[in-house]
Image (cartoon, rainbow, N blue to C red):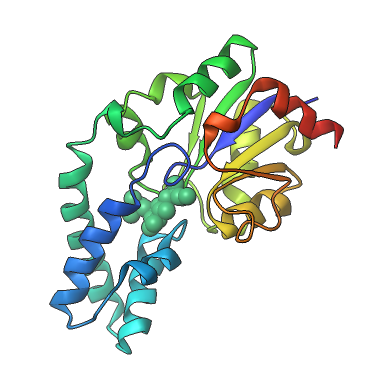
Length: 217
Ligand code: B16
Ligand code: MG
């Protein structure tokens, strides 16, 4: 039986990708790198340091490690100016109804995100009270597709991996769920999220009934 749901943050609950893109593009420009919205797709679900490494790869540049860390700090300060202005209106469609339905049925809820700002974003959007556990970029050594973030989520909730359903918008995140032995609902395009058990456009397509039907498949 399914006992818990583990949610990715960016792209599933809220769309912080637009703010990440704004801050990264500004930083890339200052380095003389042309960073496009298409390039930004490669940063989804990826850690902050890895994101900058990808941008440097695109620009054909290398920098010493200490400068990479300083630039990541700088990008994060810019990004946090936008996060500070976030409101519950930025929660993606269907999220609140689905979280309430899960709670009403006694299902457990945790967050599994690469972001070190996850807690702050949940606070700003008033989603924090729904979450029994938050596992994010501050708690994991290995990024997705390693299953660490979701396995730690299951452990924190006191459930087995096979009792969990992960909700993910990034292919690496879907792979992380499958590598952890969990069911996975892809949020986005079926052509991209090929390994997911089912793919939905957004959480308006989810219900507790549909969740339980996954275990019967
Ligand atoms: P931060 P998720 C990810 O969130 C974003 O998709 C990714 O673009 C970002 O680089 C990463 O968080 C780290 O974020 O700089 O706030 O630590 O999709 O795993 O919820
Ligand atoms: Mg995501």
